[in-house]
Image (tube, rainbow, N blue to C red; front, side, top):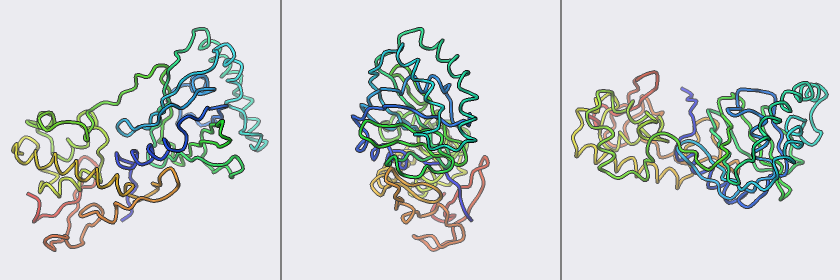
Length: 322
């Protein structure tokens, strides 16, 4: 069975760290945005206005989001005139058909920009990227062929380009005019044991569903929930309210252990995931239950089972997990 998975905390952390090494300190000289509306959570004009002539001061992960902290360097009145470039073909490399589309929407963007530029923008801002299922951020030379499904190209002062590519268009691009973005839920690598126990104690939902609830714990997805539950000896269908304090403590430690191991190995490449350098991760080689339906448990040799909980596949060992 082939699984299409969304990048989870270790994959997003790996990409953010890689990008931080490569683009921190760079200045965004110009922005090109494609014509597909799905990837743009913020209006195209606003994204272009915030990014254009901003310096990237930091790249970090918040939940499953990659956040670029920006120092804005431009004058909003000047930037208003620059926004028009955002929907033109990148470096003149677009086809005639694409050029026609870009010009057709230019007046709309200019109208949006006219209203946005009336107020002075904050000196601090953020570009927030959610990769969705198949999103990728690529740092490359301008001469590199533009991949199909490229939705954004940022031209950097270092002479390189930062491109967002997403075939399935589940990824999202947005901006915040002040450095105040914060995802819901708590960070699993920062939360203490007491707070962790408080999050899950008394909940009547299956523990697997609770772990995937991003309003509780952000960044943990299907792969790492399955792997953490296996190490903690808990079945994914187990009602959270039935889990003892000691079992929750073991689950807390298992989540910490699994996430740290996965980050050290560059995440799990089970579908489209590659890091900022285009390289695959290696944690999939350490999976003990995820994606191993019918294979023998690595501990007791019992065949791994798969069940569907709230539309998501869950893998577990019927002997090792109770």
